[in-house]
Length: 160
Image (cartoon, rainbow, N blue to C red):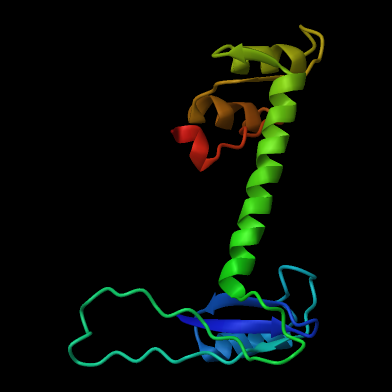
């Protein structure tokens, strides 16, 4: 696996992993590598510091160095790491907002979720927004029956 620091034609920096250099070249030719910020498929490699491991360093697990983006006056001051952290914070905020909306506007049916969802699907009960708990087996069974279900988003801070 190889990690490249990348930059789109709009000067957005990001990074991605590829199986090999030829895999990167092939994916770029087919326009499969796109900027996660703006969606541009005009992507190129940014300058990176190489990772050199000496004989003493072999066998030790050390984190790879962060990519060093090319410096130009037009380049954004934040690098790939801070950009990813900002995107992660934004994603977490949106997931929390979604979960809070569901909790506020739906009925918590607890461990009766599978039964309630089936009853509504088959017309035995009036449709309404619900959430609750289901085992992986129950969720799989609901999906196999054509009943649309999806898990509520959980965030790291929910586990504290």
